[in-house]
Length: 105
Image 1 (tube, one colour):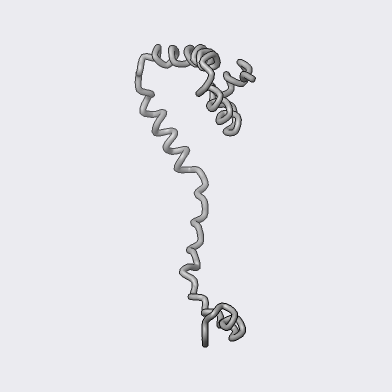
Image 2 (cartoon, one colour):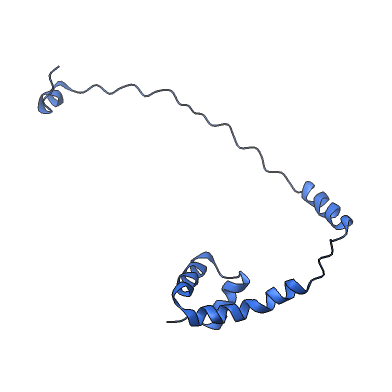
């Protein structure tokens, strides 16, 4: 069964969740028809990106973004691990177990 065009568009646009993307990508490996449909769906986005003039955004934009990021609440540092934990003392083997396994005490 082939994925619908709506499902392919969701994968192409990045809106599908991981399990659906994995299923569709697996299907695309073996289905030339769906690969062709996916190529048609992704073609407009690629043409749009190629059509951009490549101008850098204004530096004020980057400075504003960096300032907003710096003002975000910072998470609390993770507590230091309590390891290495002390070694576990060996558990003595009862004499009856030593006899059954063929070892002597």
